[in-house]
Amino acid sequence: MSLELVCPAGTPSALRAAVEAGAHSVYCGFRDETNARNFPGLNFSPDEMIEGVRFAHAHGAKVLVAINTFAKAGAMDAWKAALANAEKAGADAVILADLAVLDHAATHHPNLRLHLSVQAAAATPEAIAFYADTFGVKRVVMPRVLSVEEIAKLNAAIDVETEAFVFGGLCPMTEGRCSLSSYATGKSPNLTGVCSPPEHVAYSEDRNGTATRLNGFTIDRFGAGEQAGYPTLCKGRFVAGGKTSYLFEDPVSLNAASLIAAFAKAGITALKIEGRQRGKGYVTEVVRTFRAAVDAIDAGGTEVEVGRLLAGLVEGGRQTSGAYKKTWR
Amino acid sequence: MTKTGLTLGPVLFNWSPDRLRDFYARIADEADVDRVHLGEVVCGKRQPFTDGLWPELIERLQSAGKEVVLSTLALPYNPRERASVVDFCKVGELAEINDLTALPSVAGKPFLVGPFVNVYNEGAARFLAGRGATGICLPVELPIASVAIIAGALPDVEFELFAFGRLPLALSGRCYHARLHGLHKDGCQFVCDRDPDGLSVDTLDGQQFLAINGIQTLSNGVEAFCPTPEKLAELGVRRLRLSPHTVDMVAVSRVYRALLDGKASRGETLAALKGLNLPGELVDGFTRGQPGSARVEMA
Image 1: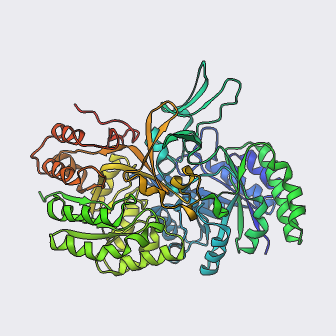
Image 2: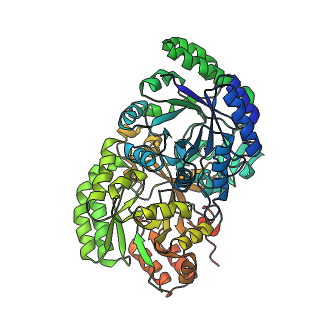
Image 3: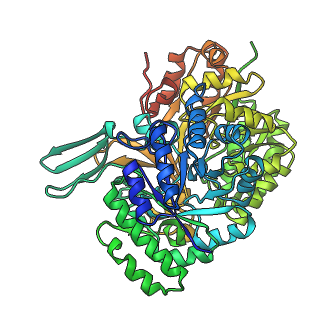
């Protein structure tokens, strides 16, 4: 069966760009704390979601709505509204992580298809069976812990679909299990849908160059003339055991394009591209390229052909295939 | 008012069997805690070294009058680790689950929920209570306002807060000790055993920031949540957790017991903690609606 390409849409215009570039599905969220990309200038109002779904469906594409943060105690209304608005818009699925949100969706929106977010970090047949049996979850986004071989074994042991990240930003920490950002800033993916939030970022220049800081903690330093990167906490340089290094992860992004054929063989249903914070130009290029690669694999193309299609994307920033290869660990 | 419980959490670090045996012998005889958690929570690769140790420690602690809880692995994924979760829940002692992988194994019996399970609201707590959870140690980053709401909604569940020790902040598929030493996780040589309180991670400007412990990242700062008994009652929290470090944990337990019994003030408690050989500065931001790294204010 063909691999489904699941593409990011941070804005209505990115959604249209992704659909026109060949996305089988797009994923997006509402403009509030219910989704894990709660950044200024991003996301959808309920009306924009209705329009987005209408556009996608008219072009044969699906819309998956991410409601994948953990509901705030005593204030679940925003999450309930997001579920209701997703159903009203005709979303093809919602992507959830919180037990309370899953429970509410399964009870009150039995017709909504439920996907389990990477934020739920379900990495075992036992955990996945629990979500499938209890809430009727139909698809699980793979935590970034497993190698391709392990995903293949997992797929043999479960009877729900799996989706794996293939390109874009990469968390070295297990998503949904990380409070580094709130330790430094008070805000985190689980609490507020943000990591290393921009309002806590400062770039300060001195005679040695530029220091990038997150709420006062130095995350990296750059020499004069060097481009200072965004201070994402886990991609910074730190000192441990007398060594200065990118201890957690180099400033790299994920590119598992060379593994597309292996993903298909491992029984993965869908490939996910990260990047809801990206503009429509980027989305168009990446989606078009990956769609061509997926189609080529489908048509029995060789890895060399696929590699040629993706060559343009491999230039520029540094990349890794992450946990999919065991040596990353 | 019922007495606030005091728990000694699982040892998060790679301590040798000898060190663990000595540590728990002293805990059994001298520590002022009523409940002790055993088990390897962080790394499945460490389990073969300690698996054989737990039966004797269970007995040692129980005969000293401690309630023993077995804590399961927080991020199991390979078959051996998954089997360990099942086995731990079968032993017969109360189990603490740290990943939902353990849920089928505790079906039909009471269990505890550890701080690695995402309970951010009363709905999630209610769901787990419906499955048999009798106690929940809430996630460390949970805002204190949420703690009161969740505990208020479920008066029958014993809620616990992480009160002392380096804060467990993140887990990864990657081992940072191995990476720092130029190794991979599969051939890690167990280098994490060199840092029995975790290895400090400083910023390039020398700020104390984090600590690594194999696949785990902790705070460099040592959490010191020192509430008055009245404050705890107001929150609905009935138990505090002390996380083991190489510092004198018997002393730590006595300091907290005195605080919870109203025999020592917050100031006296903090001063006593400061006098110990701690691996980092005292922090308590998460319990004050601040970033977790915010230092304890002594006044």
